[in-house]
Amino acid sequence: MTDLLRGWQPAPPGFKHVVSVSLGGSKRNAREELNVLGQPFILERIGTDGDEQRAAALFQALDGRVDAFGLGGADLYVIAAGRRYTFNNIRRLVANAKLTPVLDGSGLKNTLEREAITQLDPLLNWRTQKVLMVSAVDRFGMAEALAQAGADVVYGDIVFGLNLNVPLRSLKALRRVAHLALPVITKFPQDWFYPTGQKQETSVQGKGTRLYAWADVIAGDTHYVKRYAPPMLSGKTVLTQTVTEADRVWMQERGVARLITTTPRIGRRNFATNVLEALFVALSGQREALSEGEYLRYIREVGFKPEVNELAAPSEA
Image 1 (cartoon, one colour):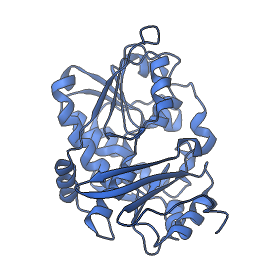
Image 2 (cartoon, helix red, strand yellow):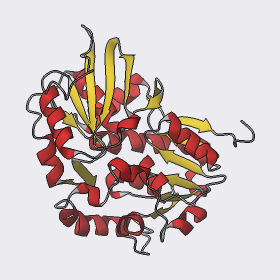
Image 3 (cartoon, one colour):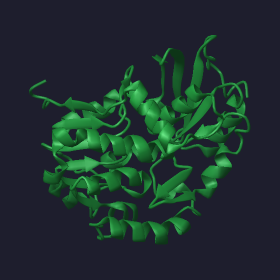
């Protein structure tokens, strides 16, 4: 345990401390201070480079020493079409947290991201937009909100997740796939379907490249967007969640015209929904996930809104 926490610092007195234990890369680690509704916080992300044993050990070592955990680089739950599905291997991973609540962001995705689509309509006019969601079953709230706003949406779950040329063009089709596939998929390790560790740095060209060319807006998880993207994304809008400065540079180099994050920038980066969900739970003083209504109340009270970045081309910077 001593080696595991070498260099780690607890929050100062009076602060609440949120730690996101992530299966993602340690290069994206961050620690930031902020004040939310008068309460000082430390928000921290610790990446384990895909090492599930190290992640499980961190949950055990920090249990009871922080106010809330985020779970990054993986989903404990997927909420799709009114049903909740649990990844068995991730449930075992977080079982070492006995005292501190663990939040994976699924509850906040279903509220904050729906709200973000509504807030962005005056800017984007969704009825005029062709949108590629690289993966929708893990952000069903956004998928539904885009369809309800009138966007022309293609859901790429089968194309990118299974490398099959089967783009889904309706919520009905997405719901059918979710109900058929998720009970099976959640029995397998999640890294079969979602990149962790070094896989997050690997680009894969496949059957979905033409969908990037078709779309005006590329929406979804940052790692998924980058993993399957063609070399250039000239003029595109990317709608995602958590980005680092390196991600911004990557998008600028590929000609992305506009970067929109559903979460605000805190310090040097945008934290993922798992971190912000854990923040709201810690702020509430509760020891479990909040209701959708409670999350919405906090989102509006704190004033979280999408962050819009107009990106200049490298030659213009």
